[in-house]
Length: 219
Image 1 (tube, rainbow, N blue to C red):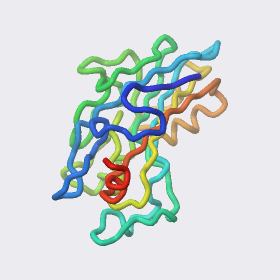
Image 2 (spheres, helix red, strand yellow):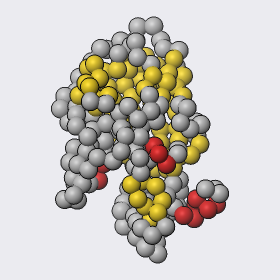
Image 3 (cartoon, rainbow, N blue to C red):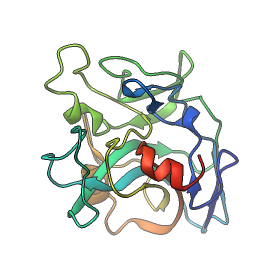
């Protein structure tokens, strides 16, 4: 399989319009357009009955001691964990493209609805969204807490010593429907599709809010 996007090159920086947050000189970060990028895939194996799309950041700090703290930086040596930004399942075999901003266009406090996926205001023909990990991140914030279904883009710590990677992966499956229900997560889907993956393809973007790293990169 092959996966690509017109929004950014593979292993290149993700534009701010596809992020949850962008840099802000006064407040470190501010909310962004939070649009989902376009994605396209082909070279699908015979026997494919559905697709799954997962987008995750494998570079999230495993401890929050230094996260977004003035005068400190999250060390590059800190162990990292996964953070899911998009969980989309039961994509029919005849669909191999997702247009930009069709599944997310703006930050929605308390999260977008689900699990039925919407394109604009219409239900997207049986596609289902899982909850992304902003659900847990905002759990203690009275203004933002809720169930965050669908896509919500990058917002790594503004003082992280490393740029984060955002890995978009499409899986071709030999089943019509992933056996998960309700408020399922990316980890739930990974477990549920074990033994059903015919092929997969990944595409990676990078993102940082660290002023030092942005200056070094000339951004």
